[in-house]
Length: 94
Image (cartoon, rainbow, N blue to C red; front, side, top):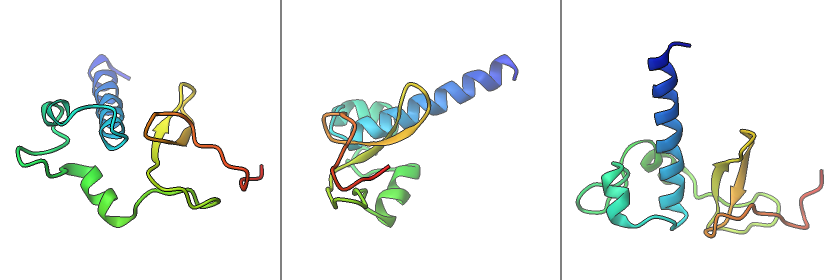
């Protein structure tokens, strides 16, 4: 891809990571506002607002809530807890 396309993709990934960090409680409301994740009233904006309204994220195996999706270093999406640790449960069988 061209340089501009690569920059746009990198910016998109950074925005998705910031959204996940906000939902996971890892960044402040001020930072979330600066990234355009929430508006001046604290309401969630954009794609995460739609996703959050559709379904709360929870583990389909053990039912644990307060989880969020995050991409690993190798690009695999995994559920993480609010401390950004990968969720692992005994009920999941590979």
